[in-house]
Length: 127
Image (spheres, rainbow, N blue to C red):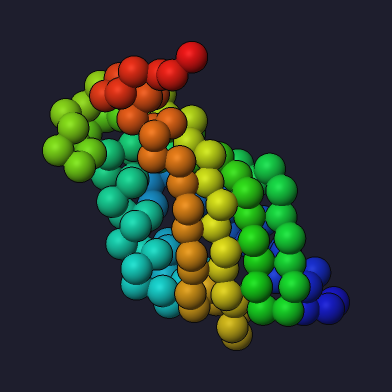
């Protein structure tokens, strides 16, 4: 299997493994050595327990995998000073992973924070 197919399959396996479950550090370390990614996952799982991840589009080239996706969950705990709202998060994002020796070693993430604040009722949605 070529590196591109291998990396694509790895990211699909990773998303399936961490989606909809408690994202323990041990689980994350099975897939990544990137401490900033582990910390980010723990932070979001704390506020949106067992959030789910959905891949909408994936592009792979060499050791890089780019995913356009969505994170879905319920706001159950404090998030950046915002008390729990019990509202649904349906957050679009784009993330780029660098994979080396079968693990994510680096990432870059962009998520639509305005959409999230609108969904949590912190900002009024623009019409």
